[in-house]
Length: 328
Image (cartoon, rainbow, N blue to C red):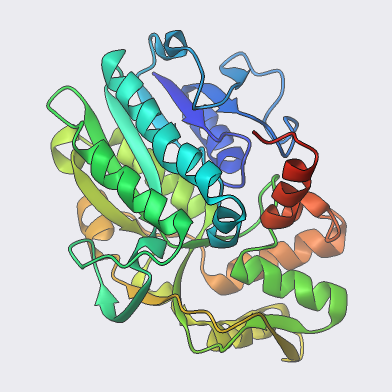
């Protein structure tokens, strides 16, 4: 079975691609590789690497592709505000183009990794049937793509939407602009855990390997179980308030709870139910916040991760790429 993974060189893609290869899939890894090609396995006969833009690639790339996992996007809310027009052109128009071409070319399944950020601010625990409330360009583009791509689904074209919790954990294309990863790096570098004001905001979390596992479950599930369905990806016990999460991180890696505030108050706050993905797909995460924090801490201590790598803060790296005229 041949799987096209767009955004394959990113934080999730560089974990997902090796997992797919281990499962015996043939993989086409498509990306613009702003963070480097070396993050993916090299010299693998089952892996084809393509440097392409989802907005412009030739549809022939999709010949004999059985399924697509469409990770290509400008990631996270702050990055989305750098250039809202570009964010919209990639995160909405680009991904809708991929799905449309996929259906045209006879691809059988399209998996859209979206984000729980579409919920924005919510007082109550939300599930897949709840009203959405996207507050940023990134979240609005995700929601618009979800809605329009779902209209393409039919008996011959299975569409699955995965609204991911905030991701954490080690990846070859590391990100320290994600809450748990950033907390660990902050203490490693400065002796204090950085906490985004005001710390009372709720956010759900999922490990990068666990969300990749959810994508494979969505790939392998019978069409009648998943077609036209939306699944939140995470677990009920990993809904945390950010200040409490920081305490857990400190305790897990065995450090004193020293912290510092940063940023303006975060208006995004949501608790999410993950009962559906557990019931329908049998999804059970292997990681929790504590285990993920220890994983990142050990990678920093061993030198496996460089805390000063400029590519690990997505918004800053994109600013550099925009300034250099590399990103169009």
